[in-house]
Image (cartoon, rainbow, N blue to C red):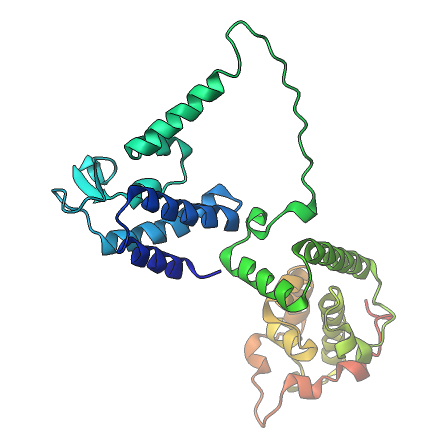
Amino acid sequence: MSTWDDLAQELVEKLSTTKKEATVKKLASKVIGEIRDFYGNENSRKKPLSIIRKAVLEAYPDTETKEYPLQYFTDKGKGNVERYQHLVLKYLTLSTQEWDAVGDDAREEWKAEQAEKSQVLQPTETVTVKTTKKQTTLDDMNISQMQLDAETEELVKNTIEQAGISLADFVRRACQVYAKTLVGKAKQFSEDLTAVPTKDLKSDSYKTHPGRADELARRAIYALEMHNNTSTEKAQKWHINQTAIQAITGSKPATIKAILENYQTRLDDHNAKHDLNPYDNRKGGGRKIDLEIDLVALVPDGLDVT
């Protein structure tokens, strides 16, 4: 299907050679039909209709007097300004009720339909109508009914087209994958990493594990405390803080910041014990904490970490 801009341009071109109101009605009806078919959600139809109406107004601007046959008088919208517009704008509406006010032929046709419907039941008749509501299944849905944002909707469309599957199959598979992911994450959260070797914990095999950063931070704090407690000179010691733990574990700053909130009192006490502050970590000679504190060697696993 063409874009709405293309559809609008096509409509404008056809209007330039149209002289009959009936033809205008058919052209408008076709446009409205395409919008309704493409978008199942009523609110989603407003934008494409707005694009098309705008294109028509640019090609056929409002006038104060009637300048060509296919114009109608209106004072609706735009501050109720009286003006003449191209007749197609009257038909380009998503509201069924408005068709009653569009053109003599359309108005009479609509009234006749309503009169015919009202004659089906006599005033004295009592009729019980039994309706059976059709159950909507996943196979009946279209993508507009999912109410996705524009970017996601386009991504899903391209994906199912490339994969050669239906929307229903895509949704089923997506649900299956996401459900397995959540179950897997839940199992990982409950998994005890204490016995996992530090070497393995720092490898890519545990990179996405939700408990990895917490366990590495626990071991890094223990390693730094042991190092400082066994060092004989202050110049050998390191202030334990977010930057230090981040450098040793390789975890993200925001993650380490959140984790250390649970250790703050412990860290404050340890740093005060050794009279350490962040400036003590600015050591010369190219000394860096991650080069001097070998977490794998100092804490091979988490079994003895306190």
